[in-house]
Amino acid sequence: EAGVAQSPRYKIIEKRQSVAFWCNPISGHATLYWYQQILGQGPKLLIQFQNNGVVDDSQLPKDRFSAERLKGVDSTLKIQPAKLEDSAVYLCASSSPRDGRNEKLFFGSGTQLSVL
Amino acid sequence: GQNIDQPTEMTATEGAIVQINCTYQTSGFNGLFWYQQHAGEAPTFLSYNVLDGLEEKGRFSSFLSRSKGYSYLLLKELQMKDSASYLCAVREGNTDKLIFGTGTRLQVFP
Image (cartoon, rainbow over all chains, first blue to last red; front, side, top):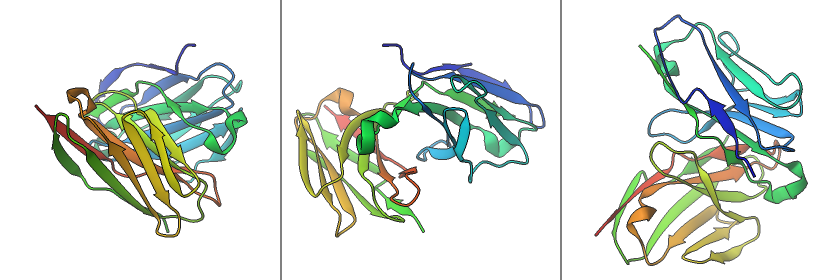
Protein backbone atom coordinates (compact mmCIF):
# COMPACT_ATOMS: atom_id res chain seq x y z
CA GLU A 1 0.00 0.00 0.00
CA ALA A 2 1.44 3.37 -1.01
CA GLY A 3 1.89 5.87 1.80
CA VAL A 4 1.16 9.59 1.97
CA ALA A 5 3.10 11.38 -0.76
CA GLN A 6 4.34 14.94 -0.33
CA SER A 7 6.38 17.27 -2.48
CA PRO A 8 8.70 19.04 -2.57
CA ARG A 9 10.91 17.52 0.12
CA TYR A 10 12.78 20.78 0.73
CA LYS A 11 12.11 24.39 -0.18
CA ILE A 12 14.14 27.53 0.44
CA ILE A 13 12.56 30.92 -0.26
CA GLU A 14 13.01 34.52 0.74
CA LYS A 15 10.54 36.30 2.98
CA ARG A 16 7.56 37.78 1.20
CA GLN A 17 7.75 35.13 -1.55
CA SER A 18 5.01 32.56 -2.02
CA VAL A 19 5.28 28.78 -1.82
CA ALA A 20 3.00 25.80 -2.35
CA PHE A 21 3.11 22.26 -1.01
CA TRP A 22 1.34 19.24 -2.43
CA CYS A 23 0.01 16.13 -0.72
CA ASN A 24 -1.55 12.91 -2.00
CA PRO A 25 -3.09 10.86 0.84
CA ILE A 26 -3.40 7.09 1.11
CA SER A 27 -6.00 5.83 -1.33
CA GLY A 28 -9.45 5.74 0.25
CA HIS A 29 -8.59 7.95 3.22
CA ALA A 30 -11.33 10.54 3.53
CA THR A 31 -9.62 12.69 6.15
CA LEU A 32 -6.58 14.80 5.32
CA TYR A 33 -4.58 17.00 7.69
CA TRP A 34 -1.88 19.64 7.34
CA TYR A 35 0.38 20.07 10.35
CA GLN A 36 3.16 22.59 10.96
CA GLN A 37 6.12 21.34 13.01
CA ILE A 38 8.61 23.94 14.16
CA LEU A 39 12.01 22.58 15.19
CA GLY A 40 11.89 21.11 18.68
CA GLN A 41 8.10 21.20 18.91
CA GLY A 42 5.25 18.82 18.29
CA PRO A 43 3.09 19.05 15.17
CA LYS A 44 0.43 21.78 15.25
CA LEU A 45 -2.76 21.23 13.25
CA LEU A 46 -3.31 23.87 10.57
CA ILE A 47 -6.30 22.45 8.74
CA GLN A 48 -8.34 19.25 8.56
CA PHE A 49 -10.43 18.15 5.58
CA GLN A 50 -13.13 15.51 5.44
CA ASN A 51 -13.38 14.64 1.74
CA ASN A 52 -13.35 18.12 0.12
CA GLY A 53 -14.90 19.97 3.07
CA VAL A 54 -13.02 21.81 5.83
CA VAL A 55 -13.60 20.33 9.31
CA ASP A 56 -11.22 22.56 11.27
CA ASP A 57 -9.07 25.50 10.22
CA SER A 58 -9.11 27.39 13.51
CA GLN A 59 -5.30 27.56 13.71
CA LEU A 60 -4.66 28.41 10.07
CA PRO A 61 -3.32 31.99 9.67
CA LYS A 62 -5.83 32.84 7.00
CA ASP A 63 -4.25 36.15 6.09
CA ARG A 64 -1.34 34.29 4.49
CA PHE A 65 -2.11 30.56 4.44
CA SER A 66 -4.66 28.81 2.24
CA ALA A 67 -5.41 25.18 1.51
CA GLU A 68 -7.69 23.31 -0.80
CA ARG A 69 -8.75 19.77 -1.55
CA LEU A 70 -10.96 20.32 -4.54
CA LYS A 71 -11.74 16.74 -5.60
CA GLY A 72 -11.50 15.22 -2.14
CA VAL A 73 -8.23 13.47 -2.91
CA ASP A 74 -4.96 15.42 -3.12
CA SER A 75 -4.44 18.77 -1.46
CA THR A 76 -2.28 21.88 -1.73
CA LEU A 77 -1.19 24.24 1.04
CA LYS A 78 -0.03 27.72 0.06
CA ILE A 79 1.74 30.47 1.94
CA GLN A 80 1.65 33.98 0.49
CA PRO A 81 3.59 36.00 1.53
CA ALA A 82 5.98 33.92 3.65
CA LYS A 83 7.48 35.20 6.90
CA LEU A 84 10.63 34.12 8.69
CA GLU A 85 8.56 32.41 11.41
CA ASP A 86 7.00 30.11 8.78
CA SER A 87 10.25 28.13 8.65
CA ALA A 88 9.14 24.65 9.69
CA VAL A 89 8.35 21.18 8.44
CA TYR A 90 4.89 20.94 6.90
CA LEU A 91 3.46 17.48 7.43
CA CYS A 92 0.50 16.05 5.59
CA ALA A 93 -1.37 13.14 7.14
CA SER A 94 -4.41 11.08 6.27
CA SER A 95 -6.74 8.75 8.11
CA SER A 96 -9.83 6.67 7.58
CA PRO A 97 -12.90 7.36 9.74
CA ARG A 98 -13.81 3.72 9.26
CA ASP A 99 -11.16 2.91 11.88
CA GLY A 100 -13.49 4.46 14.46
CA ARG A 101 -11.98 5.88 17.64
CA ASN A 102 -8.71 4.11 16.86
CA GLU A 103 -8.42 6.31 13.79
CA LYS A 104 -4.67 6.72 13.51
CA LEU A 105 -2.89 9.20 11.31
CA PHE A 106 -0.43 8.18 8.62
CA PHE A 107 2.09 10.92 7.90
CA GLY A 108 4.00 11.85 4.80
CA SER A 109 7.72 12.65 4.92
CA GLY A 110 6.99 16.36 5.09
CA THR A 111 8.26 19.46 3.33
CA GLN A 112 11.05 21.31 5.12
CA LEU A 113 10.60 25.03 4.46
CA SER A 114 13.34 27.57 5.14
CA VAL A 115 12.42 31.24 4.83
CA LEU A 116 15.45 33.53 4.59
CA GLY B 1 -7.81 24.97 27.51
CA GLN B 2 -5.57 22.20 26.28
CA ASN B 3 -2.17 21.26 27.60
CA ILE B 4 0.03 18.22 27.02
CA ASP B 5 3.28 17.92 28.97
CA GLN B 6 6.23 15.64 28.31
CA PRO B 7 9.88 15.82 29.36
CA THR B 8 11.99 17.50 26.70
CA GLU B 9 14.89 15.08 26.70
CA MET B 10 15.86 11.73 28.19
CA THR B 11 18.93 9.53 27.91
CA ALA B 12 19.30 5.81 28.51
CA THR B 13 21.69 2.94 27.90
CA GLU B 14 21.34 0.17 25.36
CA GLY B 15 19.51 -2.82 26.89
CA ALA B 16 17.90 -0.74 29.64
CA ILE B 17 14.25 0.21 30.25
CA VAL B 18 12.97 3.77 29.94
CA GLN B 19 9.60 5.29 30.83
CA ILE B 20 8.40 8.45 29.07
CA ASN B 21 5.60 10.25 30.89
CA CYS B 22 2.82 12.38 29.46
CA THR B 23 0.23 14.42 31.36
CA TYR B 24 -2.67 16.11 29.65
CA GLN B 25 -5.54 18.54 30.17
CA THR B 26 -7.92 18.69 27.23
CA SER B 27 -11.51 19.50 26.41
CA GLY B 28 -12.89 15.99 26.76
CA PHE B 29 -10.98 12.84 25.92
CA ASN B 30 -11.33 10.37 23.08
CA GLY B 31 -8.07 8.44 23.18
CA LEU B 32 -4.32 8.89 23.54
CA PHE B 33 -1.71 8.04 20.91
CA TRP B 34 2.05 7.62 21.01
CA TYR B 35 4.08 8.30 17.87
CA GLN B 36 7.78 7.79 17.19
CA GLN B 37 9.64 10.31 15.06
CA HIS B 38 13.22 9.80 13.92
CA ALA B 39 15.16 12.96 13.04
CA GLY B 40 14.12 14.28 9.64
CA GLU B 41 11.37 11.70 9.22
CA ALA B 42 7.61 11.57 9.61
CA PRO B 43 5.95 10.43 12.84
CA THR B 44 4.91 6.78 12.86
CA PHE B 45 2.17 5.26 15.00
CA LEU B 46 3.22 3.25 18.07
CA SER B 47 0.19 2.77 20.31
CA TYR B 48 -3.34 3.80 21.20
CA ASN B 49 -5.09 3.82 24.60
CA VAL B 50 -8.67 4.79 25.26
CA LEU B 51 -9.41 2.70 28.38
CA ASP B 52 -7.39 2.67 31.61
CA GLY B 53 -4.63 0.15 31.82
CA LEU B 54 -1.61 -1.19 30.04
CA GLU B 55 -1.35 -2.06 26.35
CA GLU B 56 1.66 -4.18 25.45
CA LYS B 57 3.17 -4.51 22.00
CA GLY B 58 6.49 -6.30 21.93
CA ARG B 59 9.20 -4.14 23.52
CA PHE B 60 6.83 -1.17 23.80
CA SER B 61 3.97 -0.75 26.29
CA SER B 62 1.67 2.19 26.91
CA PHE B 63 -0.32 2.93 30.04
CA LEU B 64 -3.28 5.24 30.59
CA SER B 65 -5.04 6.64 33.65
CA ARG B 66 -7.93 8.85 32.54
CA SER B 67 -8.75 10.03 36.07
CA LYS B 68 -5.19 11.33 36.49
CA GLY B 69 -4.81 12.63 32.94
CA TYR B 70 -1.63 10.57 32.70
CA SER B 71 0.03 8.17 30.32
CA TYR B 72 3.43 6.64 29.92
CA LEU B 73 5.30 4.84 27.18
CA LEU B 74 7.60 2.07 28.38
CA LEU B 75 10.46 0.91 26.17
CA LYS B 76 12.25 -2.28 27.16
CA GLU B 77 15.53 -3.78 25.95
CA LEU B 78 16.51 -0.48 24.42
CA GLN B 79 18.31 -0.52 21.09
CA MET B 80 20.31 2.22 19.41
CA LYS B 81 17.60 2.56 16.77
CA ASP B 82 15.15 3.63 19.50
CA SER B 83 16.92 7.01 19.59
CA ALA B 84 14.11 9.27 18.37
CA SER B 85 11.47 11.73 19.54
CA TYR B 86 8.37 10.26 21.14
CA LEU B 87 5.19 12.28 20.70
CA CYS B 88 2.19 11.99 22.98
CA ALA B 89 -1.07 13.04 21.29
CA VAL B 90 -4.59 13.29 22.70
CA ARG B 91 -7.80 13.20 20.71
CA GLU B 92 -10.09 15.80 22.21
CA GLY B 93 -13.58 14.62 23.07
CA ASN B 94 -15.43 17.72 21.98
CA THR B 95 -13.74 18.36 18.65
CA ASP B 96 -12.12 15.00 17.83
CA LYS B 97 -8.99 17.01 17.05
CA LEU B 98 -5.62 15.30 17.65
CA ILE B 99 -3.40 17.54 19.79
CA PHE B 100 0.30 16.75 20.02
CA GLY B 101 2.71 17.37 22.88
CA THR B 102 6.12 18.85 22.16
CA GLY B 103 7.75 15.41 22.15
CA THR B 104 10.47 13.75 24.22
CA ARG B 105 13.84 13.34 22.55
CA LEU B 106 15.34 10.03 23.66
CA GLN B 107 19.03 9.30 23.17
CA VAL B 108 20.22 5.74 23.62
CA PHE B 109 23.92 5.28 24.33
CA PRO B 110 25.95 2.08 23.94
